Image 1 (cartoon, helix red, strand yellow):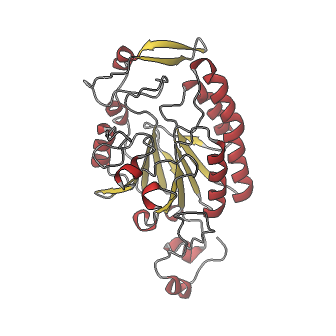
Image 2 (cartoon, rainbow, N blue to C red; image 1 turned 180 degrees about the horizontal axis):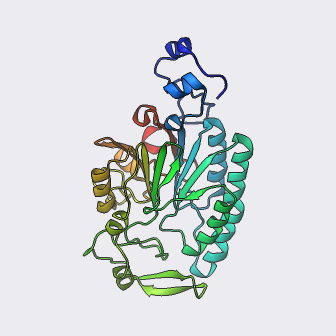
Length: 329
């Protein structure tokens, strides 16, 4: 931001929503922050930061290109990536494919955005299509200062905004099982076969997923490891919550997480961002819901056009803008 706005500027712009919509196409967006600290002191205000969120790009390079274009248009202060970002492959190819993609395409995106936008906070989680061997490649990007990987037991502070992330999803038919968990203790998994990455051996091991998941903490138990989080804060969970029409498959089945839904109800983050079910907005006509004080969002994902949302932390519900979200076209 340039010079601090004075009282006349505040009166002229009123609510501070002086940015254009983005339902299709990516226009330039001008964000005027009217938080008192910014108006009076000309300082960067993290409680008013603009956040750009997307997920489920699945290694599709045209979607990564569109994400770069959208970020340049929106000019966010924070970029959040909600998992299932890397290409699918067969188990014997997954290490080379996903590690290589992080080191090239993901890194190139983040370097480009840093060069074009200046300092940009970026946070990410994985999804159920990622494999654990890609963690080391992401850690190298963290060492470069390009991003931060989120987890439920570690709170990331972006100035005054806190973030917590969770990568796992309930059992799915896909072969990768590193980021799958039973939703709650006693749930059953009907998808028997899968592979997990053995870090010590440096290779994938075939497992009976029904038995394997019983040996691990559930999603409910993992999320319980989240300690106190200062407001305002954002939850980033790959799986959408159950019961909010943000989780419906093309076949009509709702596959959201009861554990994530209970966590949102109990902990009431200011914003909760999700992915995983690409077609949910098209199936239900919903991409946003309100649960108490929590704005819950799943923008889904398209095959040809990037679906994303952006919003200001000063007023997430009032500024939430959908870009190519199916139910908003």
